[in-house]
Length: 197
Ligand SMILES: Nc1ncnc2c1ncn2[C@@H]1O[C@H](COP(=O)(O)OP(=O)(O)OP(=O)(O)O)[C@@H](O)[C@H]1O
Ligand SMILES: [Mg+2]
Image (tube, rainbow, N blue to C red):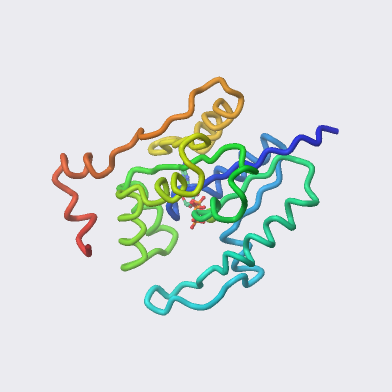
């Protein structure tokens, strides 16, 4: 049995498609998929409630401990899916980090369909427009292991195919491929998206 284990991170703003992509990728690579968002909720790995946002605050120490515990018994590739996935384990252990990017228009639709409203919706959209998740990843692990994937207008299979090509070394890692801020500004719609800021 191949005991070689790669740790692959799938990051991105909520609603960008991390979980659907990670599910398909895990089945193609025969990998273990850890959905950090679900794990935090299921095992209550929280330190309190963010009252202003009506959300739970993840306890990163507990999350990190639990993720590493799950990985320890695992002999396959591991896919860690979560918008703060990069904070759950030491950088040296990470093989590659994929940051999924989605056009704010599409993302807004997806988030509304998932029940995001008001403050949470606009905060997440602003985070995507301002590259917050990308910068979090850069800050945590530098740019060497990073790859952005623009998922806008693509099906899940197509996104997974791109990720697999990068993992197999058939496609170059890409960075700085989207500019939502510039795009919205050119279209005169920036104010509509950043209206609360
Ligand atoms: N490429 C895609 N094509 C069509 N629908 C998609 C695509 N990616 C995601 N979706 C849909 O968008 C919604 C959000 O996807 P998903 O739950 O995977 O996001 P997420 O990044 O895991 O969000 P969260 O951070 O909240 O866990 C789902 O309804 C999913 O089916
Ligand atoms: Mg998810």
